Length: 105
Image (tube, rainbow, N blue to C red; front, side):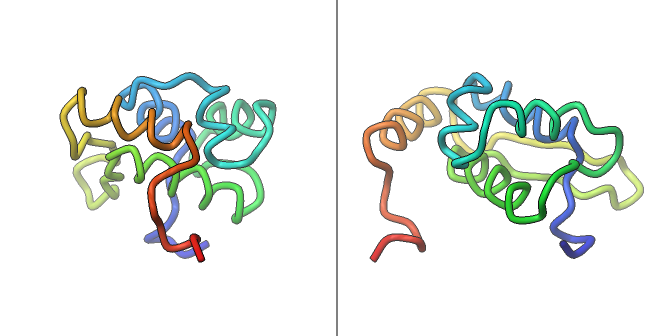
């Protein structure tokens, strides 16, 4: 995983909370186990786990409107691109089979 793609466990946890979803929902959206997500979120520094799993979690959060802010000397973080109601609507769509994305045929 390139440095630009790296996210911390704290960023993943903060992004999930900001999106208003539980660990079970995020794990389902990323197609990983809850245990894997918990391990990732509890990582000190870069999120632990297989790079593909970290990318899947990051992509799932980005689909929900979470934007990851790199360190860049000001501190890494997350922000919400959409309003709270838009995030709920997107999460509902994802739970019903998803919105059209790059992985759809």
